[in-house]
Structure formats: C-alpha cells, structure tokens
Length: 268
Image (cartoon, rainbow, N blue to C red; front, side, top):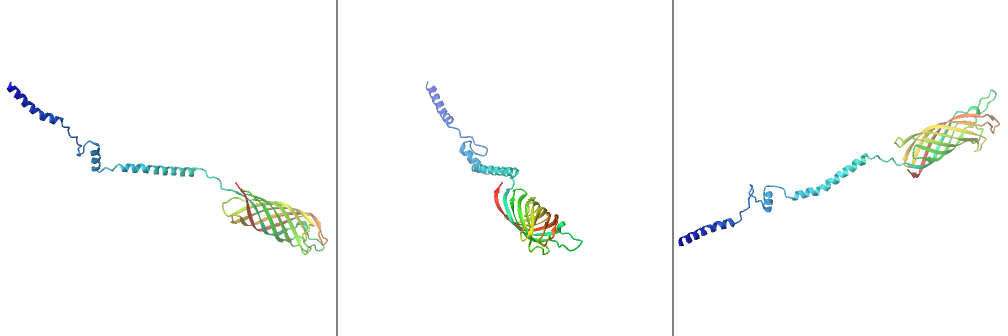
C-alpha cells in the first residue's frame, strides 16, 4: 500500500508543470516581416515598410470637388461656344442734318432754246445752295425721310435772285458691311418751284437717283458725300423779261456734302 501511494504522489508532482505550461496562452503569431497580426502592430509594420499614411487618401478626397468643378466649368464653356449667339443689337434713330449742294445743268431743255432771229438768254443754268434733311433710320439698312433744298441758279441776269426750290421725299439703302464707311443708294421724288426772290413763277416735279457714302465719325454723327441724276419737269411760263418759256424737261447732276446727327429712338 505504501509503495502504491508513493508512486501516485510522484506521478502527480510530475504532471503539475505540464498542466501549468498548457494553461499559459501562446504568443501571437508574427508575420514574415516580424509584425504581429494585431491591429496596432499592423499599423506599425505598414509604417516600417514605408507605406504612405492614411492622410494622403484624405487629401485626394478633398481635391476631388475642385476637379469636378473644373470639369463642369469646361463643359459649360463648350456649351456656350456651341450655343447660337444672339443677333447684334439694332437701334432706331431719327437722323437729320444739312448739306452743301451743287446743281450742274446738263440740259435745260425747251426752257432755253436758241432762236433763229435774235438772242434769248437761258434763264435756267447751274447753281449752288443749301439742303436741310431729316428722316427715320431703321434698325435694318433703310432710311426714309424728306429734304428741302434751295439753290441760287444762274439766270443770265433775268432774275435778280433766281431761287430754285425742291421739296423731296427720299429713301436710302445702306448695306451693312461692318465698316464705319458705308456706301448707299438713294432715290427721291418731289416737287420744284422756280422764280425771282423766292417767288414761284413756274413749278413742276423732280425725280432723283443717286449713290453716296457716309462715314461714322462717332456713333451719333456721320458725314457723307453723294451724287445724283435729277430730271426736272417744268411747266411753261413767261419770265419777268417777257420771254415765253415752254414746258421743258431739264436735267441736272447734283452733288451733296453733308453732315448729319442721330437721335436714338429705341432698341430691338
């Protein structure tokens, strides 16, 4: 009995260290680089391996909105470039001014004829004067207006002051070439009166066809030069010298040197 008890005691004493060793927790497994599988050692291992800290990803996230806004701005610019542009702003004007004029007599017609016997001086020659004009300038290429012109004519001293008056309705067509200097074509129709010292001893009708050019020296001021052909129908009359003048178609070549200003009426 005593021998059996002693053998059991020896076996128990030998088993106690083995149980203590089995109860102790095993150390965590380490990675090949020597870092453990835990959270904190993993971060340390990544830092030791030379990886960028996580703050770099945050910076890239912050840069993303700026890149998106730049892309949107580029798209808006492209859309604006492709979008059709609005037409240029057109303005309506009241246009008026004065001009120096010259009427060159091309043919006086039956108003001045040579007589077989005696001499009958020509009462209708060339002359110069002043023109007053005013009208409406549309947003497009058209001008519509009227003019009054009086010209001191060469009457071979039969009139003390022979005044040739014209009252015309006029129009112009001004093509838009994109320059300050703009050519135009003009036409007009009206009535005339001729006599001594603003009198009206005879009258008739006038037609004018011409062309010219105007130069914008400012947005509201233009100067110009024009020329036109003007046939004039004059009724027969007896002048102050007692000569009988027959109904005639006289022809003139007119020149104008003008200055005109504009007053803005509205925009379209």
